[in-house]
Length: 94
Image (cartoon, rainbow, N blue to C red; front, side):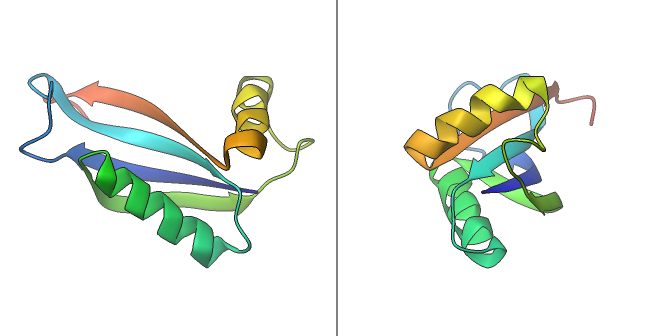
């Protein structure tokens, strides 16, 4: 499994974006390799009406390497193959 972090901003036609300037999106992706995980994440984020600005990090992870907080997302991704956690910030911050 791969854990990727992206910085993204909502697209102009996205719903409910008035106060949201952007987000750091934590992605748990069950994929064959990092390139595939990156492609899946970027495509899914695009479908959610967000624009990826940068990839901030990417690591292969295991059950033993995730934090307590991340454990639930990791286990959910084992079932659903992808999990996205949005940490949004207001339009006047980053």
